Length: 576
Image (tube, rainbow, N blue to C red):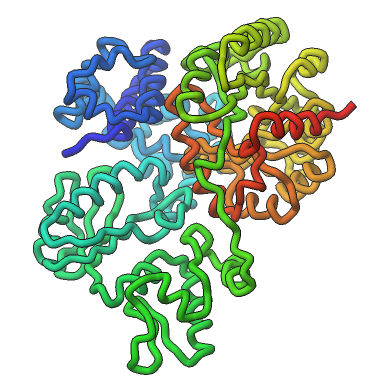
């Protein structure tokens, strides 16, 4: 079974969780968590590095002991230390961590005090009113647990698209190599670039359907075969993701790809357009009675309905057909449009590499500039910078810029927004920066009006450049805090500052609907990686996918500008 970075990271995260539930050494726990993040963000497949005898201990945060465990996981899918840990606790105890608000420390309390080791036991304890009696929890927490359990029961499991990507790529390459296969295409919400997906749909054009299907259900990463037919089969991979493969004839491949790409709302709108011509559109083709009008390619289907090709990212029935009819489809932004990243952290706060290393990686990626924006002092968990340390970093950046050629490091800071809307650092030092990012990192539970006004007051600071991850969500982990994004957009336009689309795959904040609203309101965005290490440049791919779903063009994003023009835009956000 191929082992991907996400598999290794998941096992290290599980070890960290189990150790924390047991109350183990916090430094050991942190080492596993840091290693998991390094592995997850790595641009290189660690299994490939192991196969070529690369020294993994040279990776940041990976010592000899962890390198040996990585090699063991690549070879066997697990490691002895993890199996030993699993044997010391109930087998389903980590399921409790899937609920919002339940971290390892609270799970330890639940296990030690009430012997709760799975979700069923948790539900029974909450319904019986026993959780409210525990120190540090209470009635409110008990109610939140019941609500979370109910929500989880009503929601099918979803996965971050970015984490599913290596599994999709491996399977696609595997199927493409099967004898007789002419084409393999990913469809569904994955193709549309949605931030999370429920399952994966693959369409295949092949001369030998039985051989293709046998190869599919025999794939090394298959955990369970759900259905095995000549034209359709379904499996669950060992990662938990369900994959459906359909064999489609060449004459209807385009129509099937359109149909299975979706979305449902877009398909309904397209069928209505066909019906206006007394035609029928389905997964087999576009028909005028019994006569086939189009079906081999998506382009042919759109053209027959007097439409230009509509990119999959836009197919959500949010005005894309009307825009296509009026020749108003946007020229969507690409990764190549971005000239620099304006949100990055270093080892001075919670990053893993120095200013010089982060700059070298950005330059190697073909960028013209990089803003260093470490956290401010209030975020003590991230070793945030106070005024004195920030001035030292400014001087370091000035010295480095004198040595660089055709590349510029911009001076910035991600400044905490305090509860009353004030910023965490003195205005005098903020005036020395090129970029001031304002962000909420605490007090997520304020009422919507309070949270919105808090952020708007921070936007009003004369040095503010843009708001980072404006809703504070973590996909599949933490919902957005209550904030009126429409008011933030309107205020950003009035104030003349920007909003961020944070490309970290766990954030992708703003969402696609908010991005489209910014475009319609004329509020520029910044697409950033929120990089904490050199490999986080890869986050740009997820950020661009989100931007395309939000109808964004290069003109809507300020870090598509060359440095000279960017500096003018940044300076224009400053108020006296």
